[in-house]
Image (tube, rainbow, N blue to C red; front, side, top):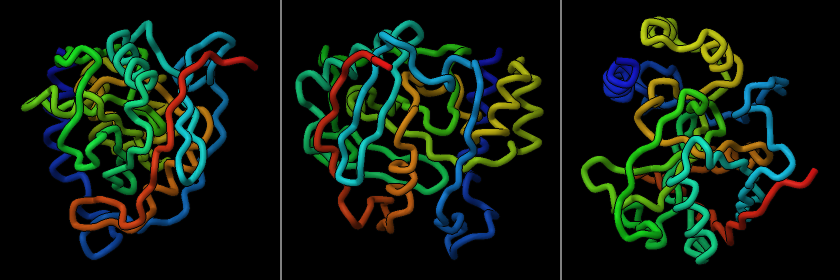
Length: 242
């Protein structure tokens, strides 16, 4: 029931995501510099990596983005991502989509946003966990229900702004049984709660969110592609050592 309610909510809210934001002429928010709060929490997704946790380091043309990975909650997504990293699949790719206040997306070796693959050359199922949410900074698998294999190497960073959750969304997520502590964290750090149980969350930025925000602030064309190319020089996977 929780999954069904969140999926229905996603469809409704996505359609009106940018409506009435009081920003630019197209209804999107103005691309202001983002000031994110410093969060101290023991919530595992947001607490940062512990010694020995798997991490990924994105070396981009605008700086490093460091992410802790969650293989216990999303084993196939992490295996696919790390396998592609080890093959060098992401080397010299670019971020092909940047929507301020929403997501920054990459992972397509063709650079078009319409192709990709998995390490198995076959799609894999979405993986959902109540412990992993679409908080700001979440690293998610960008799969397409219509053509799962076409985007199976693609990923996106949640770049939502830190602001209080919409009251209607909070009410609907409460009715779906969401832990009140999760809702409070959404209020504090920001996020896309309506995407919970629709896409796989498999990582979380713990350093370099300013780089994600900088990419999101770039001017884009009508397809949300940054006019200034931002390269992913490489993505390396290792374990965290304090």
